[in-house]
Amino acid sequence: MELVTLRDLLPRAKKERYAVGAFNFNGYEDAAGILAGAEEARSPVIMMASQGACQYIGVYEAAGLVQGMAKRAKVPVCLHLDHATDYDLIKEAVKAGFSSVMVDASAKPYEDNIRESAAIVRFARDYNCSVEAELGKVGGKEEHIVVEDRSATFTDPAEVPRYVEETGIDALAIAFGSVHGFYKSEPKLDFERLAAILKLTDCPLVLHGGTGIPIADIQRCITMGLAKVNVGTELKAAFANTIRKMCAEVSPDEFDPRKFLKPVKAVCAAIVKEKLTAFGSAGKA
Ligand code: 13P
Image (cartoon, rainbow, N blue to C red):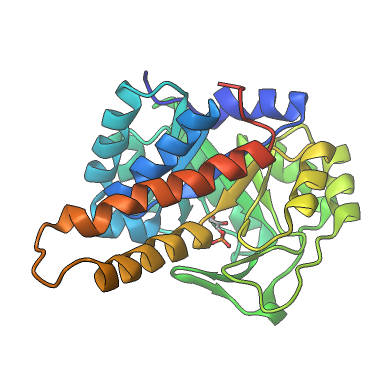
């Protein structure tokens, strides 16, 4: 199967009140685990490479890896560049065959955010690539983007309609209480803000910082109309913990890297299957 875009996945998800899970990968093993989990759940899936992951793997290499996996996949796969602030890298990813990108100009003033995100949308259109952008600032640490708690600003609903209209984006990341990374205290989502934004736009909305939010809170957002949920840190931690465990278990004489790495796929697959089931997208492929 060819890669699909957010336009292929999110409007239907919003209408039928489920969310498509979007999962960060950093190499072959977690990427393969994400796809295996989605296939087990018979769910569409969004595989995300962050800017840092693209610099680590290579943009063309990441695109080639996931395009290859999607060819024989039993479920629709979207390859999405997550949280990109480097516009040259975004253009390279679009040309390399990513089917979706996120331009993150959320640290910029409103007018600049609109102008720069709209320019990326115009560029991506020619390649049939969808675009997500962010309004408001999600707190926490997402690789190279660090937003201190005091700088995190919730999305202002009044700014949303013009932003969506003038940028022409396919999905909008909003800040309403989630943070990237592990939570220092119990997360408190602002459901009223989400409801207000949902009333003002048809654009599918995205929850960032899915790790550590109680599943019932995420499900409440999805029932209200949220269409995409991002999960990164939980998979990263599972990957690292599995390697640590295998290093302790595998014989010191062993030198086949696959003996250490193989279990990562199953561990990631189990997490992804569980999330997709909780997000209501199991069986929707
Ligand atoms: P977490 O790492 O907190 O799950 O957030 C992931 C994310 O939002 C990626 O954009």
